[in-house]
Amino acid sequence: MSYRTYQKRTAALAFAAALAGSAVLMAAPAAHADVVDVNYQCKTPIGDKSAVSPIDIKSVKSGSGYKLTMSWQKGVSSSPVELGKGSMKPSAVIKLGGADTGTVAVSGPANAAAIPANTPIKISDLSGTYTPKETGKVTFTAGVLTIKALGTTTTCTPSNSPKPSLTLDVTAAGGSDSGETQSGSGDELPQTGPEDSAIALGTLGGTVLLAGAAGVLWLTRRNQAVRR
Image (cartoon, rainbow, N blue to C red; front, side, top):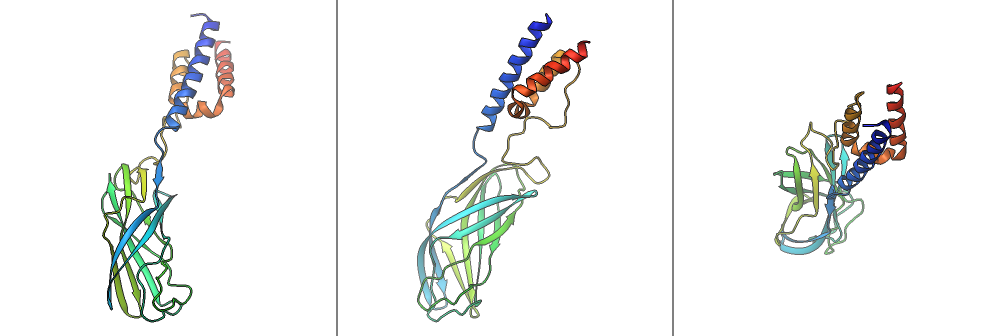
């Protein structure tokens, strides 16, 4: 193979790798979230109550896990007496599905202002940490909500089998970062031979995508230096 032919072949492989890397990065999204209506049936000290609230669950990567935040867009349940500032403490569980099972406990601060009697109780955002035990697509669905106030406990259970509010592609703790497609170990260096250089380009698809023409120029100059 002539040197000019080799240059053309290397450039073609580089651009092919860039396109392949682009296709991989544009594959299924790492996360998908929906605002889901949850019909809560609440057992209160003064009888049963019900309320529907849209629930939103968001995630932020944190170390080997995720910080989850669960939000209520409408109030649930109510109290026959005013709940003074700091007298109501909410908590909940988020049910896992798909590749992982179990629940994640989430909690939040007590009410920052007094809640008038006989008005829907607005739940503050609740947060907790999820650390994947399995690798794959995991769903997060609203579970039981617990409200403690004035020495009483109200338990609200979803009754409409709500669909997941969040879906994540995760990797078990100790594995590679989830939500991203890995295209090689990241610390492998190209070897000295022409064929080895071409293979290295293929395994570094994401790097080629970012480097573009500069990466092709670097490889060409490198091979010229090797041949001298």
